[in-house]
Image 1 (cartoon, rainbow, N blue to C red):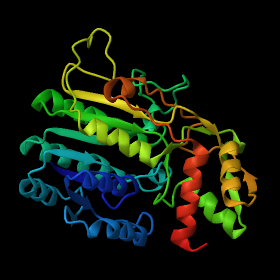
Image 2 (image 1 turned 135 degrees about the vertical axis):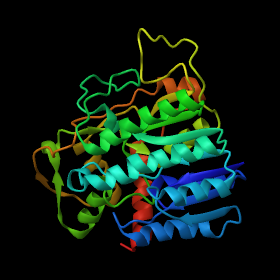
Image 3 (image 1 turned 30 degrees about the vertical axis):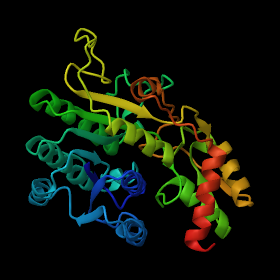
Length: 335
């Protein structure tokens, strides 16, 4: 089938495009290649896809309504994997308008494109950050997500509400996927695992926030992509058991669903650093600092709904995934 992947030059987007192409789908990628992190990395990802006859890349901005309308009008897409967004929790504290443009206006443009062009299923990236100040663990899709602690999280919660509205009004099948701390080869330089690796190899001090008392549900990128593919192939349906007297964000009486995708194995930050040190064969010089604004102390995914829906949950061990990232990083940077 013909699939639109937004954010195709991104970390998860590139990996998803490769998997779709490998199974014979035709893929159109859409990306603005912004400079939030080095554009050269995004160009290198696209170069991996460029030689495939089933792939075409369109450069444009999600917030450009005319460009998105044109993309859909010419595309004939059966399904859409919407991964493009202005990423980063802490950057949202510094540049909130970028998030309003990309994550809110951009998402409306995607919804309108799907609505007017017969898209069979929209799968879009949400985030574990929507759980915000929740203290109950593990995070379950049924939990209320009304207390975001960053604008980034608020835009992702907004996306879920917006998609539900289009499912209600126009019958658009849509599924939101709450990603939990994705890592792996071709990853993002703004993520801690990349920054730690860079600094450890350079003999520089790494900043360890919340005095090392953080826990994260690190999820390997191949597991994320497998989940996206399986969900993409199973369009959302209305939940016949949905009870409006006991509403839940997870399902609805319209074709909209939300799933966690995480490893379901939260790792203490200091244990994560130790795993990285072993893979690098070097020790880190650590500087312990307080919690950053917009951050949360722990994430932990309950993935039982995902398993019940598509028969899959992430399973790559952290040591395996980190080893693969380190091997790739050394090859990519020559270090």
